[in-house]
Length: 83
Image (cartoon, rainbow, N blue to C red; front, side):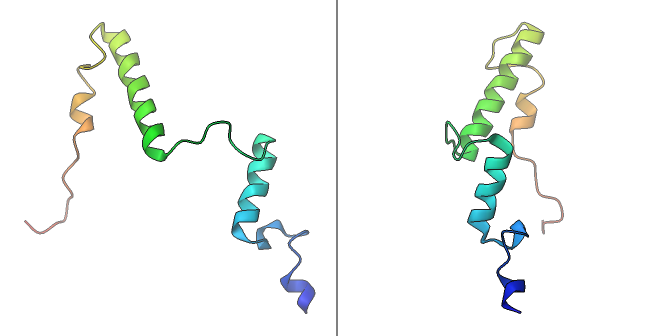
């Protein structure tokens, strides 16, 4: 019965979570660690700046003020909250 609990070599999802994630990362990217470690906020900021630059190119406006993106950057009100 103990073999059923500790057979993570055959069933990799039974391994401890950090080890399982490391194995998945290694299978996918063929390396143990990413080249550059960035926070979610840094990734979001770089995507936003790329998107703004692309829109500025498309509309021939400065990257700080593309017409369609400014409205989307403001937080949306939460529906269903008591007013």
